[in-house]
Length: 95
Image 1 (cartoon, rainbow, N blue to C red):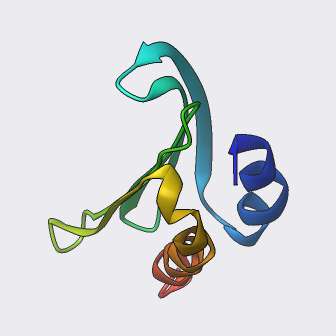
Image 2 (image 1 turned 120 degrees about the vertical axis):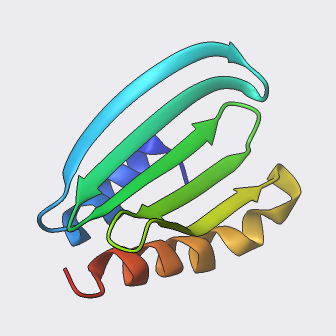
């Protein structure tokens, strides 16, 4: 998965969330494409690194708690679909 695929496959399933895209060069794991989501008292970031790392973080403002924090290495690419299922389930619950 990358930012283009996220925009095509995941973003349409997140109704009611504002979405901002940003990029940054030469980070810890290469170039970064970052997606920030906000809505329904939740803040989320999805990070795609050019070296294959993927980060997902969700913060619930209502309960003042981080409810998801995952960093997947390139070797863990088989875990990516499950991580995005969890992201969608968490953000769409009670939205």
